[in-house]
Image 1: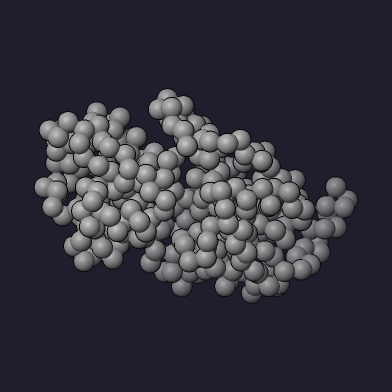
Image 2: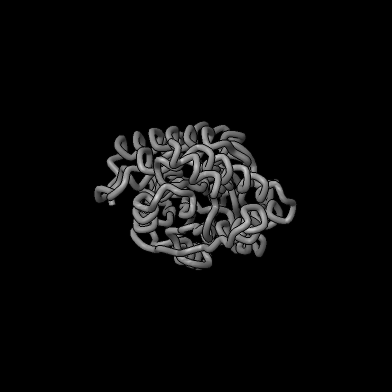
Length: 307
């Protein structure tokens, strides 16, 4: 502990790297870069975003898990990579609950259920009635098997007692293109990539799969407000450090991240993507991770979801 005490007094002693497991230009990368703009002034060193892409953020996660726990290598990641991937497909080279130290949640992003305008459903109740009448013929796109949008669909099917034809895509872009083109009658997605098409009337939002409305779509009711309980599939972005990072360093990082998220221009930039900025303690993030890890693990097992 003497060593870790000395370490934390000299921290940070070199540039801090925020590793992102997703490609540049996506929402996780954008979120990391918004923070990286502000953290140097708060931490006194350069902050670099490094994209280590592949295997649904597994490559980036594994890299950070094996990095020295000195606070200079951080991981900005999503609910999916930490709480869902471990339950699906190949065995991961890391354990999300054991190999990381929670630092801070940054945002919550809510899934939005949307339909092609040709579908005569203006809200969730009408959509569910349509799905029942069409005997499970309605197609619904997601960003892949085991993605948050896919799990949101499973929750919707259970809550509304309906059948849907799940069509998994590789990412948001292709699913939006096919939904606009009418090849798919509905989809679930983070609000960000949907927003321009909702505003243009090319798609219609019928419900939010979260516990509150999205600031940028105030007129769209949550699924619970429309009578469908437990259809909550919020995605979140958060910062983790390797396990065994000293408490003093964790506190220093948490304090800096919270200060950055509290800045008006940072809040504005995050909200503009449809996300909800969050101020959290390391304990609150640990609790969120544990809760979602258990919730999604159970749903995946019960529905036998496999890659």
